[in-house]
Image 1 (cartoon, rainbow, N blue to C red):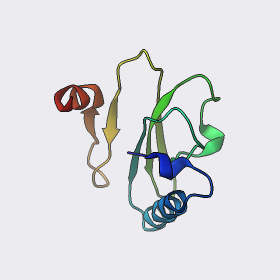
Image 2 (cartoon, rainbow, N blue to C red; image 1 turned 180 degrees about the horizontal axis):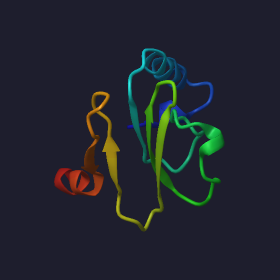
Image 3 (tube, helix red, strand yellow; image 1 turned 120 degrees about the vertical axis):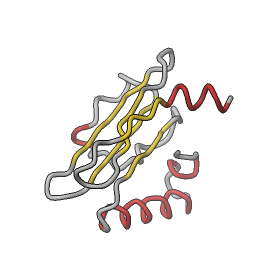
Image 4 (cartoon, rainbow, N blue to C red; image 1 turned 45 degrees about the vertical axis):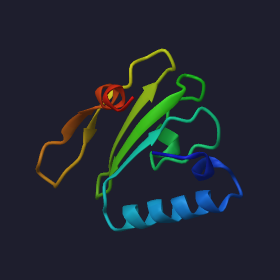
Length: 109
């Protein structure tokens, strides 16, 4: 889950987050990120060229599975929408687990 410091340019938190994100991707680790902040720079590992145009959503969930053919999943969320259910990848050859984010947030809050 991204924080303000992960998205603020010139902030040590953003630099550290991007470095850790790079290390995960280089190691072939699946990356699942929740960006529930309306402001700041795009920070998730989802490829910028495949991201929907800004302004069509307020928040998003990004899933990146590295490999020869990287699998990318982006769930854009508008403020008035329910949070989505997203696929959380496990091991290769194992179907992803579907996580209902709205149910998780409802239970927590």
